[in-house]
Structures are given as C-alpha cells and as structure tokens.
View 1 (tube, helix red, strand yellow):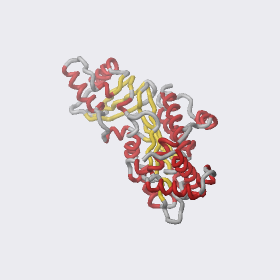
View 2: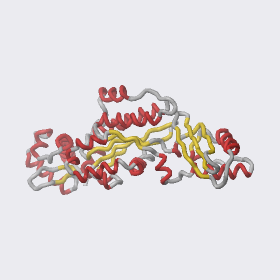
View 3: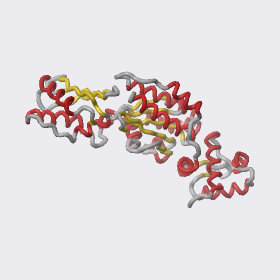
View 4: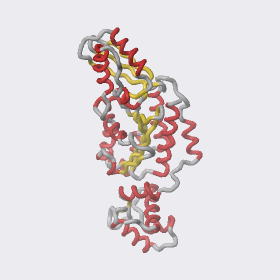
Length: 344
C-alpha cells in the first residue's frame, strides 16, 4: 500500500525525532515538531495505520512508537531529501584528506581514509583494500624462495602492491622465473588478473607449461575464495564509538557480538564484498545486513576506483538510528576523494 503525502510526512518526522532522541515518539511530539495544523488524535490515527503496515512499532503499550527496518528503508529510499553535505562539511573532510601518495603508501592512505570516515560520522569507518583480481598491474615479478616456493610481487601503476607465495609442482631455477617475469611484463602488463587468465601466450611448450602452472595458482580469482579473502585487508577505525550508542551499549551481549564481528577480517570482507558490483551508495539496514550479529546496525557503503575500475569498497557502520542524511553524503564524497587520490 502506497502512503499518502501526510502519512509520509508523519513517518519522516517520527524518524527524524527518533534519530535525534533515541526515545519512542508520541503523536504530540510529531505535532509539535512539524505538523501543528493537525491534532494529536489525527496523528495518533496515522501512526496506528503506519504500525499496522509495519513501518513503525510500539515497544510498550503506553509508549510512543519507533521506526522498524521497513520504516527506515522507506525513509532512506523515498523520504530523505537533500542528501548533501554542507559546504563546511565538505571542506572539513577535504582539508584532512591526504593529498597525493607515493608508491607503497596505499595502505597508509586506506588506513587514513577509515579514520576520516569515523571522525566525520562519529561511527565506525572501514575500507576494504583493493582486491588482487581487480587491479591493473604494470609490473609482476617471480622470485625463488626455496626449491619449490615462489614469491610473486604485483605492482600497479598507482602503487598498489600485492604479494603472494605459491608452491610449484617441481623444483624451479631463478633463471626460469626470470624468463617468466620477462614474458609476463612484456605481454601482460596493464591488464587485470581476470584478463590475464583469458590470454594465450605463444611460447615454447616448456614455457607454456611453466606459465600455466604458476600463473593459474596466482590468477584463479573467478569466485570469492578463502585465498581471495586473505588478500583483501580491511582497515577499521572508530570501533570505540560503539560504546556511545545508547541503544547498543546498554546491552552487553549485543555489544560483544558486534565487537567480535568487527574483529574478523574475513567477515568484514564478505560484508563489503556485496557492494563491489553496484554503483553509487548502498544502505543495508538492520536485518538487511548479511551478518546476523550486525542486525542492530546499519551499513552505508560505496565503491572506489583505480584506473577507472572498481577495486574496493569503503563504508560506515553505525546504529540503525544513524543520521542517514549526513552519513550517506560522507560516504559518497569520501569514495570520490579516495578514487582521485589513489589514481593521482
């Protein structure tokens, strides 16, 4: 059932009050805040209809109402107007954001970005590092560690560095690996590992066998695997801010679950990975989060790009009653700053 304009305004007002106070909202509070032309009885009837439709709920019979996940979803998708930061807000983020970077400093840039997200929002900021398979590489090198172990170094033109240790099926000489390094850098640089897998290199049969044996181990990234997860580091900042969320901090078990979730890198990668193939800002509210341990939180994410390709995701985790009108533009603007800086 589609809500009429008056019901939408009542819902929007209720959510704004609840975000600000954290207390159940009465019909009188709605009237006083933005609808003085309506009686408390009229607003009370509208709230009862919204309750029946699942947009709000009443925690106690004598209490006011609070928004449900469905109510928040309608608010974010349809009722939230002017999702923009003030000029002063934009300038604050821009002033604190690192200007440029040198090769090898990408990790520092991502760590600083998570800190800026946290400071700007007062929630938890997180940034997933670039996935190995999605970055265009300008240099690859194969270095012998032991008879059968090889260190693979991958460097993008923007300074993103990934390393991986792989096991070969037979003993390898550094001369063979040098030949492979020369072959790869001559024919395969400037493309992603996904594209590398599709290339056929015309070399001697021995070289092709070695090429396939080693590169298949490095470049097998069709799906999110345990190896893939290990390659994607998540930079996190502001976890202590959770202690300032009254609706979460008052429940010790709930707080423990959230802290435990945020400590697991692989869980965070799975959480952020959902946004890798989408454009713009995504908002996951409460029960929409793939991790049940975060059902009391909301996650706002956006992608960032390197060489015009999506390579990672950043976001903010906070309580469901976060100020979406402020958090959404913070995430959007910061993702653009990171893309610009990582390509600089």
